[in-house]
Length: 194
Image 1: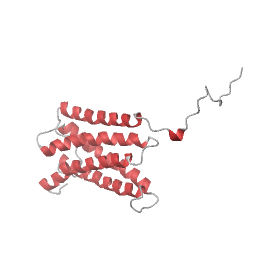
Image 2 (image 1 turned 30 degrees about the vertical axis):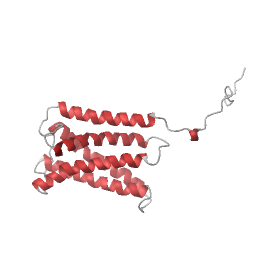
Image 3 (image 1 turned 30 degrees about the horizontal axis):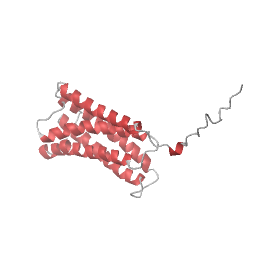
Image 4 (image 1 turned 45 degrees about the vertical axis):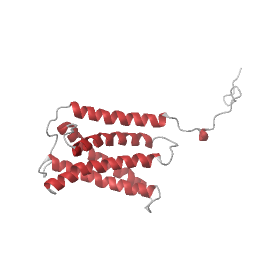
């Protein structure tokens, strides 16, 4: 007996792959990962005994100055991310290498933000003693959760066109408020120093 692998089975037509809608898991998994990352960072920052300092770089007067300048660099690359995303989506005119600019500016922004987050979590922990600090702590955890979701969604196929801009906008907005409640506050309070 021979079997034709291309023959229709039991009279059911083969599903048309172009007509399948994205499954709920395509959205649920990134949302769950984002939640786990955000909550995990918050819990760690809350239960960890703050060490007071995690790193310092030569040429800077304090770890707060290092963090403020690194956060400002991350914010600058995030602005490049926003402008290059507008070019990629055709909202602004841009060169053919806008996609490459978008990817690399995002990678650099993330890499510059990581030491800041490590210092915040390790040296200071999750704090709530005033409104500015509470928002900074909440949005710091949210930022890394939303960033994780964005990275997972990038690999999903057949997403509606609005999903990545919304998640990217949330990531950018969170980073902006984080910068406003940390680096800008530091520069306004202590002056623009290194």
